[in-house]
Length: 514
Ligand code: NAP
Image (cartoon, rainbow, N blue to C red; front, top):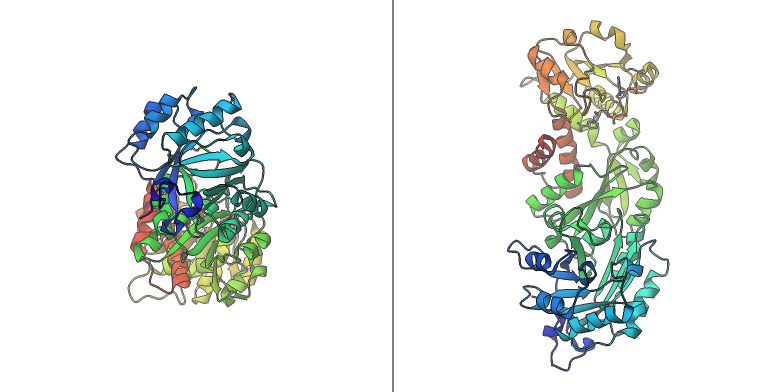
């Protein structure tokens, strides 16, 4: 069990160098209390539902903080605290006199604070009065400078008990600079990046041995841009389980904010007790991102819009059907070789197959597939591979003609769809997708009793097409099935274990019905 620095010191006269840092067995989760009154700060600090290990008391968020305020905050505290009084020039709210600011920190030290945070350029003006661990910090709200490692070395040479670097990440690559600082650290170190890309350094701080990482109390209560809410750190990313041996996975996409994949895969890893964490990566340039992140390395990626095609050039091996489709949605690192596959086609084939009667096979079934975009392309190749007789119809006729030629199947104009005989109707367009839920790719008159109707749209769970098809006596299959299937296959490709399908389905269904 870790103890706060000044309680852990072997003797009363101990200096930071005497402290046995090996007792810090796990990265701490710290919440910055940016509450505007002492009463509110105390209420959060002492709340029964407290989910953090250590709190940062931000004196600069209090109006004109006094010695008495500091005493009240420190008295009977239930966990270690860092006292911070950040000036405006370093991204804080203190606008008063510099000497008074540092004096308040010295008072906190005298009153027994566990840690006091002093900015590196203020060290000369700071006179410690007690035994608090000194956190010497550097902040940069514009960028992660190229000489971050040199700055870390400079702080290590001060009296710092803990080195702290917080810099803005202008790209995902900036997280790697923070991670390198953690890897090379000779003192307990905090190295986080700020901004929308910063969650990587925060979640992975625990993997690379950060002294602590900061989380926010909740969305909208961040002390620095990009702080992840404490509940998300613990429940989504399973922060307590992240450690040096944790394998890293993630989804490469742009945009990525609404991706359900982190929720699905982290829940699956957690359920199976697999030491792995899955992160969202909003990637602009996949050719720059993947080689850089393989230095960590990342054990597997999900790949989605707009990178499914361009990523192929970066892989050492591509599954034959994925190569024919021209799209990869799953990458596995096999001993340093990146192998790409496409689980969309197999997921769709399995979903469509689940609508068949027992003993029936896809072989020889007539499929009318509406759409010729990315999803339709994977489905057309997959269904043809399974022996289906596929007919493609698409709003933009030329795309359907091209896809039919690539697959070696037939194309029909949308206006003539009604006269095409089929056993299976597949919607591969986005028609019916939220928010335009009244749209449908096929008139009700086209729906035939006994046919299988599969809608790849999964939001909403029940589309207009599926409602009308059920009403016409069709056997319907939801897009949710394909979505779950592709995630299940990804999980199994990465881990070699049977995926917890029901857990994954519940996560998706809960998200979509919520
Ligand atoms: P995409 O590449 O952009 O293709 C969109 C397709 O929809 C094209 O065929 C497009 O026709 C057609 N379309 C769009 N708006 C239309 C309209 N107003 N009228 C007629 N056709 C229209 O997108 P995608 O990635 O293939 O995704 C298509 C759908 O599949 C989405 O709803 C997506 O959520 C779903 N999907 C589901 C899963 C799953 O696991 N269930 C996986 C992937 C995708 P044009 O060629 O004429 O533009």
